[in-house]
Length: 181
Image 1 (spheres, rainbow, N blue to C red):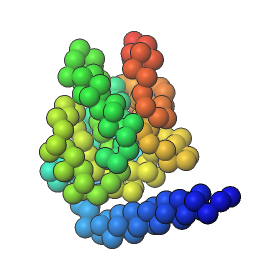
Image 2 (cartoon, rainbow, N blue to C red):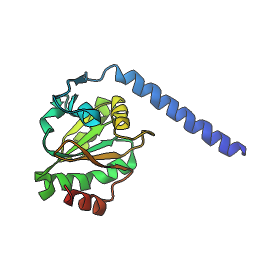
Image 3 (cartoon, rainbow, N blue to C red):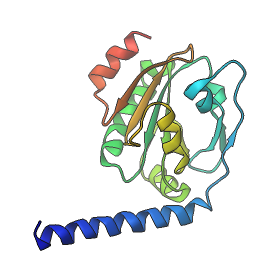
Image 4 (cartoon, one colour):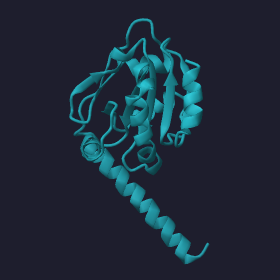
């Protein structure tokens, strides 16, 4: 390994350390997240329905209100380029014909201020909620063991996980999966 590579690795490591410290510091200012599981639902979907997360403006949103409706839950962050790239197509999906039968939800893994600034800048047609770093743990319950983003979960109206997607969505594949709901 030459000195240029070593310097690059050290620079990236310092960047990640500083980002982690910043997120940790700002996490104490995040809106409280409450959990109350709805009756009869267990596993990761039960954990999802148990969440009450603030939206980008800070208003609490109980995810239990979506019980009984098919859902597409997208774990994302404003600093994640593939997450941002797929948002216009997710907005189009939510606003279109599929959005009548499917609830699209974005769960942001970042600080409330960053997600609010992002939401003010971009027109997103589906609920964008703030989970902070606890969103990573919630995505892990759905099988995202590495904590990669974006991570999307397709949940049927029956409360069963139909499919998970790691990385930028392939919308042709997603539309085929939606047709099986």
